[in-house]
Length: 255
Image 1 (cartoon, rainbow, N blue to C red):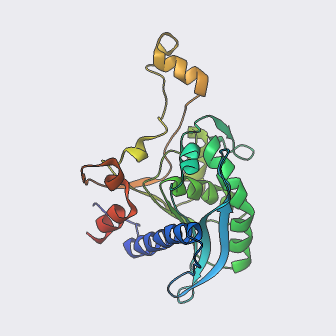
Image 2 (spheres, rainbow, N blue to C red; image 1 turned 180 degrees about the horizontal axis):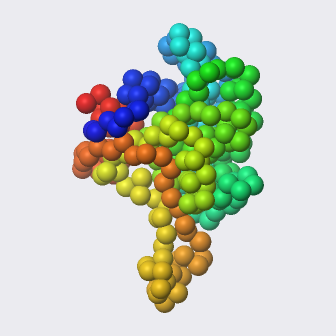
């Protein structure tokens, strides 16, 4: 893995460990077991949302926590686990994200808005000088929207995302990149999740109306753009799931 200037590997590893705890939070809840944040952290807020779907119910998606030693506040989201989570991943049409902030994927937006007040209230009341937003997979997309939401609410965080899909259109991506100096996107080049949604389904700008891809573009208005500077590595474990796992990303950070 090439580490670009400004990328804080130690901070990324701390964020990765917290994301893994967000997965533990989900599975503990599913099994009806108690869950407590491990380590020298103060839990400031729990983040829950109800995905789309007839059988969906409210799920824990992460938390806002403060490192008691450093004072850094982490907004943390886990990735896709339930079948209903997958529906949010493939709800490709876009919806507006605040005034003059472009548009974002509908499924991501519908999940994020359910956690928005908890995130902004916890961060602003924490008084923290340093805020880090992080997530894995679907959680990276929610973290991206949380980063933008915090900016709109007067907080400039850093973002350390893992295996992020594209979350919004070029207007959204450019606005966020112009607003936050430290936007990092750790990506395995062999992880297919980081390639969706498609940037655009248009086959070519001059013939898209004549192509099947053009029809898809017309139906779904696909026009997405990644956010943040990529910090990439290349690992192929022979399966889509293994190439995408949080453990694969953490191992790459550890070298």
